[in-house]
Image 1 (cartoon, rainbow, N blue to C red):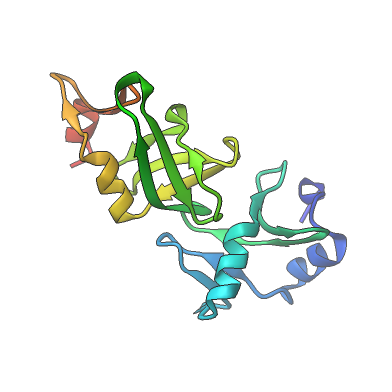
Image 2: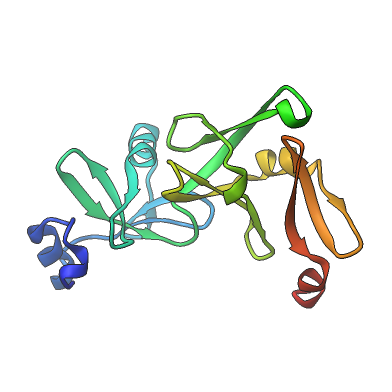
Length: 172
């Protein structure tokens, strides 16, 4: 690794470069793996979910105090496991429960849809991308509507375009 990984301690970088550091990975469905095997201890999984972060250089890590360990992220480092609505119209508030364990108000500017992966948003003040699990995704997509050229949802009284119809047809 080069100086691009300055936030990762030197001894961890050396282990990584020599192949002595066993890989920790979060797959596209949110399963944590160590050397290819899934973690089974829920307390460890919850700890990793709370400590996932990204360095200034864009490297995903588990960060706990001075401890920083690089991880491989297949899709998104955080997953949305729940959605809660309060109010209605422009006074509506939408809250998401990310795997980080801290409920957040949904940032509409970071909400988007990828045909290959589903619904995504930004969490932790926009620092990390989060992928919606199926059930919370359905809660949001219940509001799916279409116009002549777009698919959109209305949240907090705002129309949020998820995809252009031409793009959706081209990807089929």
